[in-house]
Length: 282
Image (cartoon, rainbow, N blue to C red):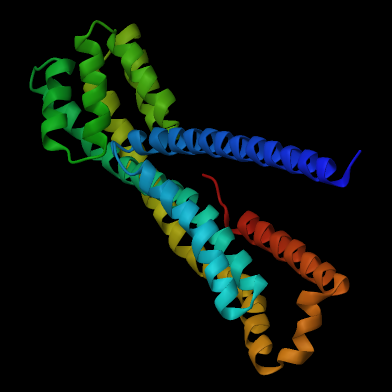
């Protein structure tokens, strides 16, 4: 076989391989984008936010494939590039989790007032359906949004108990499950639903007060955990500037990478231990 023919064959094979690799990369990127946007859309829709999933995906892509390599080239620091890429991948999920947590906490704080409102309406002689409509009009979001879904499902033919169970399953909040269970039992067995809601409101208010005190008492532990966790990273950056030659083996040798891996594992263990200590369930 002549050398020219061999070069042509190798070139054709390389072109085919590059085309196949490009198509596989595009297909994988498209599939990953669909999975991420579907996950983000689901969490945003739970918070009654119906836009923003594409923006979160672009933040992730630009941070990983544009900002991280650019900063790495400008600063000649692989560690900084990897840190920016990691933050770009983590921050959208952290944002969604924090938004969901804030919304759920606000609903828990609104529940006692809504229970008292329903009890007062029932004592005035109105039905539970009318009481729910009044509560929806008088209660701000996000709890009014969830109760609005319950009322709309009931008007479409779903039983009230089933609509409440659907809300409890969707929210996965212990307080909401307690309210739904109490209302379902009171409607099935009979009895004074208004009195049940009053007692439930007092219980939920006391529980929310206790949880607020626990959050206040454990906030110092959370701050200490953040400071202790970030202190080694801060010292590493400072020493990299002050003692550049002495710190370079930590980033350019196998032993240094191993030390960084051990540091990362110890940081994770310390974070989990502090989280376990300050997590108090009541």
